[in-house]
Length: 272
Image (tube, rainbow, N blue to C red; front, side, top):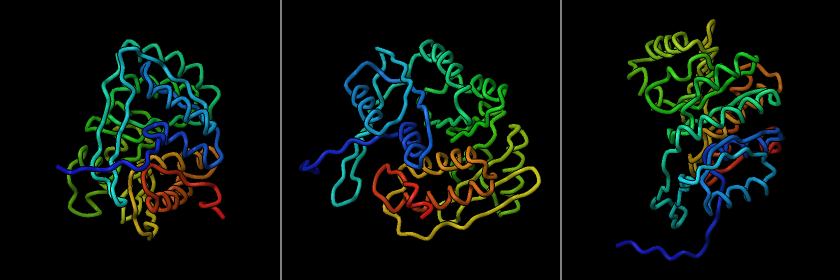
């Protein structure tokens, strides 16, 4: 049996909290809306968010266990990950719609990070509310049913996630056809495909644009998607086009994979 002697412990924000931290680290103002339990991990999460200056609206469900991912690492390699989680109650989630509606007018863009943990049971209604007041909506998707994201401005699947929805593609032409059909069916302004070493592809109504991957030594891809969509959202808030935002997001993703664990990219790293 493997034995790991623990010499150091470190707590980091993960999931949607890591997305929010990425926005904050780059200089943006952000509010995290999420659901936690009434347990010690919820208290630690609150403390970490407060220490980083991330504003948060956290609904509490006493029956819920706050999600914790325990990573066991030896010699800079992840040996095992132990997950503590359960799905929140849908009735409790519906109560958070009021929090969402209250916060909506105070922000320029809405970003949904779907990790398939049950917290976005009402995402279709949230997207509808955001679009009614003219807010761009970005979605980092999960699962095989993207109909729940209909009406969003842009979704950002990786290759495996897109393949799960549209099936395998034979070549670039086939990929373009399938990606654009999905974009049209969902009524999206754009679909941004992240392609690891192949860079990124942006599918819009009148054109397809690509950026090459930033060539770096990869230490850990954990949380790279969080950094990409956080950067994309912030750049769109700054008035950049979708293509310009993609280029900067691609650069941010290349920087963060050179770091170990869930990490962020600073403004200086990205622009100086």
